[in-house]
Image (cartoon, rainbow, N blue to C red; front, side, top):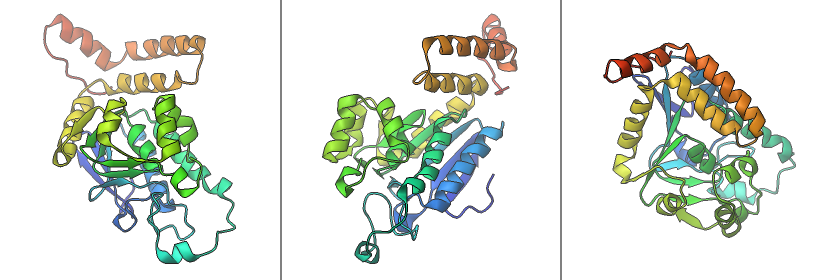
Length: 277
């Protein structure tokens, strides 16, 4: 695990790792340093069998205001919160086709994680922040939190993997509404759209997310990880491919300790005690 990260606060709570995005000066916009630290953390989490669930959240009533693509890397998030000096500069000659690729890699790594993830959306979310929230396995969101898809509002096209992932999260016409109108949407609306698992008062977001994460971490997390990955791959694979994957996964899990414990606990009429192995 990263020692002394610059842009994240990492905290262990038993088998749960809390990852808090922490760039308050940029409303938790993801610059290159945070991008690298998030991606490495996701990889480290998947490599650590003692971490059985992860919670991703933000800092100070802000979840994440998106990718920070400004050359300075520190002037704000994709919600348009830029300094006046950045606004007054002429457009950069930077090739943004290359600039977005590291952010695409971040969302791909996040999407492909085996470890279950709960997002605790504690406040404002914009741009790429939507993916950091909605690509989690469970979403806990604060009542009244404001979400803005934002790209069209800034004359941009969706990026960082958004055109691939978001149609798999939102229905076609809901996504078009968010993209074309670029209106601010509340957590209540996203709950109605089926994107939020738990809508709670702001001061309860972390408690509820922690409770869900603890429940997941106490489960058969090896089989849960394989299951979530199969569901995600099914969105791009054929039925034949997924039937083969299902068979392979069944064979792989059948001989695990948790599978034996699940059967044994049923026969002994008691709650199972899973270890994630």
